[in-house]
Amino acid sequence: MNSQMKTALDLAYEPVALLRSNDKPEGARQFKEKRWGCVMFMLAAAAMGKGATAVLDRTTYGCWGGGVGLGFGNQYVNFPGGQEGFCYFLSSGNDQWETGRQVGEQIKPVFGDAFHDDFAKGERYMQSPELVQAFIDELPIVDIPEKYVVFKPLSAVVEGDEKPEVVVLLGDMDQIAALTILANYHHKTSDNVIFPFAAGCQSIGIHAFAEARRGQPRAVLGLNDISARLAIKRILKKDVMSFAAPYALYLEMEANLAGSFIERNTWRQLRALSEKKSS
Image (cartoon, rainbow, N blue to C red; front, side, top):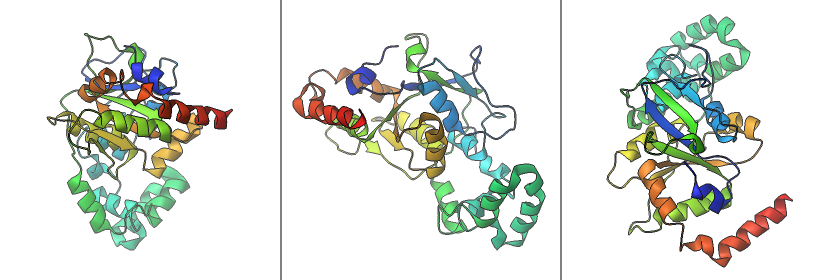
């Protein structure tokens, strides 16, 4: 499936289709069972234009947040120390309560010093465990019926045979601005892109899945998760944001390219300045 958007916006990376399937694509990349990995590694692999397809399931989602983010139910209950352990991990740290301290000692030989340090002292992304619990309660957690979530370059999707749930685009700030305009281009409302505080995988996964079920789906801007930013920047070597468009919205945006600001001088001048800066 060709992407007019990639050409029109001069995107450096391939748009990535997220598909839900009960069939595992032949030769797809996959994390080892119950081994740590960041979902964003798989997004980057599919986006880098080498035709990489990746697949994740309920035993190979990489990390507990990734399991939640891809729609494999509430995997936070399986975090060391349970969901309460995760609430302390994301906030003030598990050395703040006795069970957390005990679990920390048990997992240190298994997970290593870096994870243990975050587990004990907290990532500090939220102020308190209570606020993390409220955050979890607000997440559109879902347990999808399909076995796999597939990350596939959009150019490798066979139109008519495969229907993506979401299309994820990676762009610089100018390109993200352009995508935001296109998402709002022919709507009476102006809130057709949302930017929730979320893990990187949740922004392209369950938040976008939830939007796909709405009558007027909105795009989900992501990568405000600095852990995910660190993971993806190590591979792409560039500063990008993610823009996850439910498939129906993506098709609408593609159809609206002709006649839009893309053909006008302001966009051309902005891209020219960006190219000059990067040269």
